[in-house]
Amino acid sequence: MSYRLRSLDAMPLTVRLDPETEQCLKELQAETGQDRSALIRALIRERWQQRQPAASISQQLGGHPAHFLDTLPAGSAERSQRRLLLNERHQARRTERR
Image 1 (cartoon, rainbow, N blue to C red):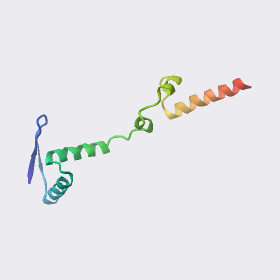
Image 2: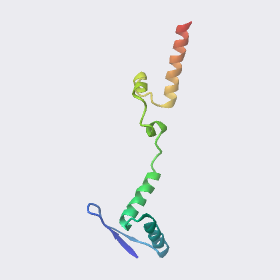
Image 3: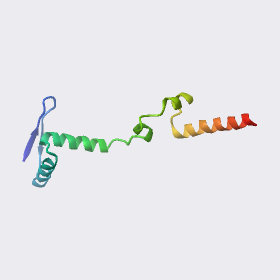
Image 4: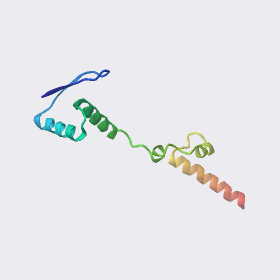
């Protein structure tokens, strides 16, 4: 069976499905209540997102706090560079206390 997917601002696309895949599509459609076009678009977007690199923890949390970024030189957001800079600060403070 062929389906022609069409939306107002999207290009049409014809997809030929074997009977097993068509049955899968029908079951997914029944579960989600979405029309075929919306379901296929959602599945494509979902698959595309799975292939994207995972966001870092700081990105997931909305980025580094502004006060943290202001205390380190530009380009020091990498973990190894941060550790080096923080270690240098720690050593400098130890030296000051003596």
